[in-house]
Length: 115
Image (tube, rainbow, N blue to C red; front, side, top):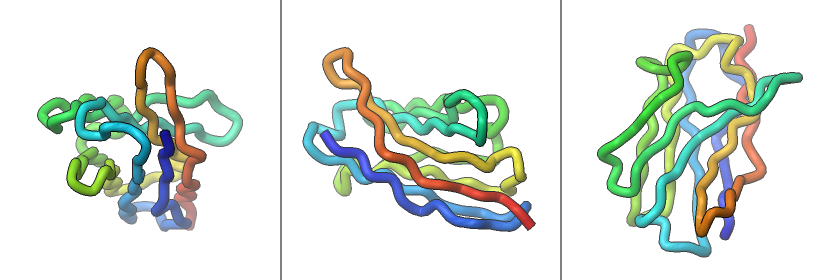
């Protein structure tokens, strides 16, 4: 199982970014995927999740209405569209899946929201 995040960058407040997580080594289309983030000196926290078919997409309250999670099962990729970013969104963003009770994480991508 491999999860590789990309798309992180330095962005100004109010800006947008789209993160990608490319998955391999498992039947991507059958599994829930999620995004999490770890702000500097804080605990890792849930951001959003998406069901295998994409019909269910729960979000953390802090990102609801600004972030959108989606997936392309043909490309084995999950996305996180982030709009109206604030400095509080600064974090390393990780994607995650659970297979057979075991958690798999990517190595993360850094999003830095600063003027």
